[in-house]
Image 1 (tube, rainbow, N blue to C red):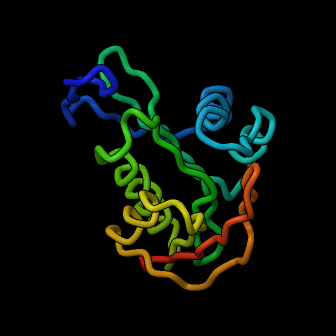
Image 2: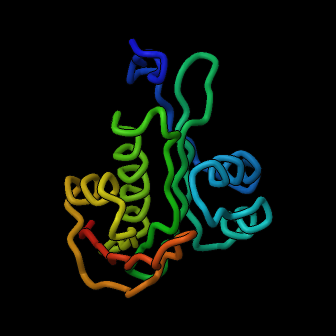
Length: 162
């Protein structure tokens, strides 16, 4: 085990929990650590209070600590993942796939036919995850994501049938 890598965890110690407004501060704190343009506590509350909202947090260990989140909306026969994040030190260990899987199952139960998301064209890890989960590119939004001190990056719109 290296100093930068947390100890292995037993997948039996991973919990995926519905996220309502009571988890807004927790999610906003994680969002601020992961994204340049973070959603604040109020924005997360508004998102999670929306009637079409679906959200989850991922917790590991004993005692449980929150290490990831996913938020999106399900409307009519479509769903969209609006934000997802996993603590950097735990990325590439299957937690993002668990979060997307939980959201996708919820969307399917709500009778959605397809799940959409946007991912920055320079997000190689995100693109690899979504492709592995069956998402395919549908279109691009030119210069969608601003970057400090650099040119904006395209958003790749991806979707998967559910």
